[in-house]
Image 1 (cartoon, rainbow, N blue to C red):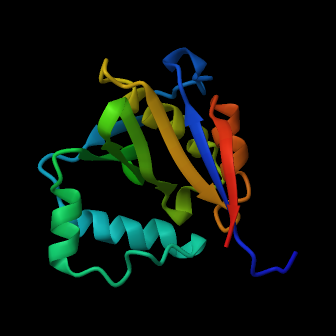
Image 2: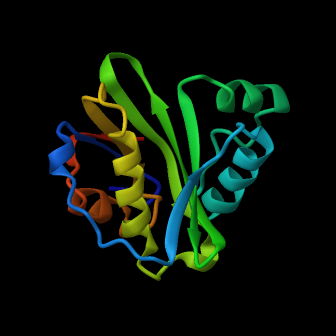
Image 3: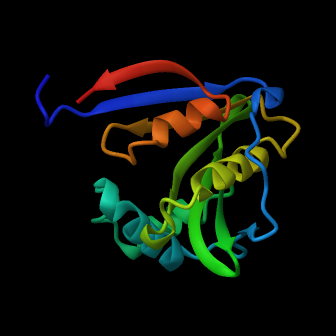
Length: 165
């Protein structure tokens, strides 16, 4: 397989009890962004995603960011480590009880400290907060952090589809 081939992994969790929790830390907390802040999401997308080649939204204008972030189904959460913003995740509540983790990641200076597992646990717990949630799903790819897929699997997600680009 060529080096420029990208594998995309689609994962799902069909039961809230499938979550394998990573021990919480008193030094880590999450806060939902209220009201929605398109400029913040744009900045986080760039700051977190630059190392992982996130490009699909780089060309979005202010209107596209406002529409996306302002959707009634979208929530953005910030993760804080010892009071400093460490990362974020976006949850999109879709039809039929599906919640997608749209984007998830740490700021570069917080990578390698074990925070990804803690924040992913918080993201999954947040996705299951709505009693109507039946499925939490996410996709990652071979361009993401080398432990991304492993982290999702360790938290209880199941792989349901793999694609190549």
